[in-house]
Image (cartoon, rainbow, N blue to C red; front, side, top):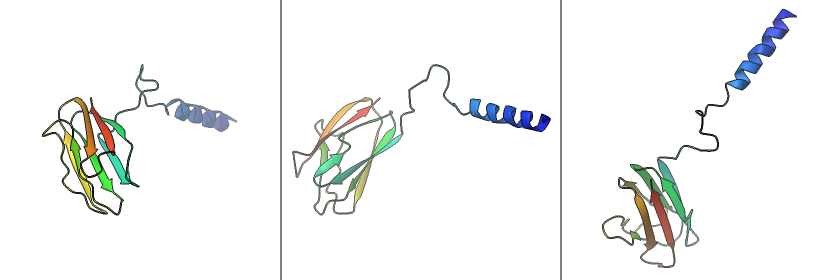
Length: 115
């Protein structure tokens, strides 16, 4: 009987220790340092992403055509042409909201929010 009670205490202790969030962080998830945007069917998925300062965005082209993503602000982002099954990764060191589009298919638009 004592071993059964001890087992229950051990299970309760394990369950209580499962919440690894710090006090006051309920509902807040840590921001990923890297994010991936998939280019497929002439769409960017997701269109809007958020990363911390120093984080990276990785664009993967799954289309049969090439794309070239550029920021609306000069000298922030220019992937060059990304062909089928190719990718490009950019690190963002300065906080801000960066809007970008495909220079070849200008209706393809996205946003990177660096916090």
